[in-house]
Amino acid sequence: MLRFDPFHDIDTVARQLLGEAAGTTRAPRFMPMDLFRAGDHYVLNADLPGVDPGSVDVSVDNGTLTLRAQRSTPSDEGVQWIASERFAGTFMRQLSLGDNVDADKISATYNNGVLSVTIPIAEKAKPRRIAISGSSSQPKTIEAGSS
Image 1 (cartoon, rainbow, N blue to C red):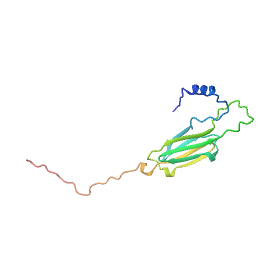
Image 2: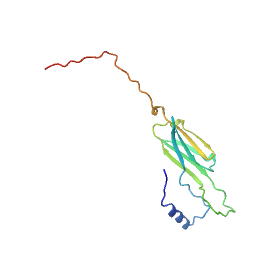
Image 3: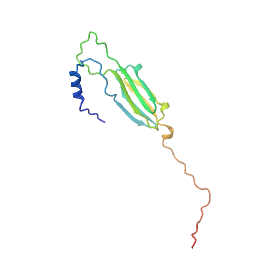
Image 4: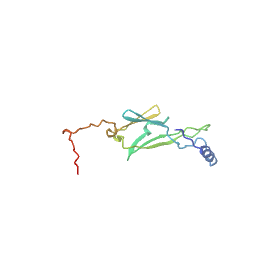
């Protein structure tokens, strides 16, 4: 899905008019991610380049998966910023989990700036075959009576 924000340029101009200088900490707008199903689990990959691995937090509470990470900026002392386009601050994303996942077995790894979360599908939600049982008694014949 392509995200279009028609107010982004207006917001940028407003921030500049209100005195936000280049090089200040800005809050990230989103955490880009991919989510797909692979067999009996879902895989979520979120881009978090430059994030300290110790700041990455993945939690599940009441059916909500929360991804949180922190990226800090270098000290502004003695620095004259020419361009500052990389977001710093807290990145956070929340997703509602359905009843068909096994929240107790969710696992996560962080490697090369990508957070990968594996979300297993619950046993009760997996496709299964239903056994069909038949009647063991002999077929009965029903005769219609005349009145």
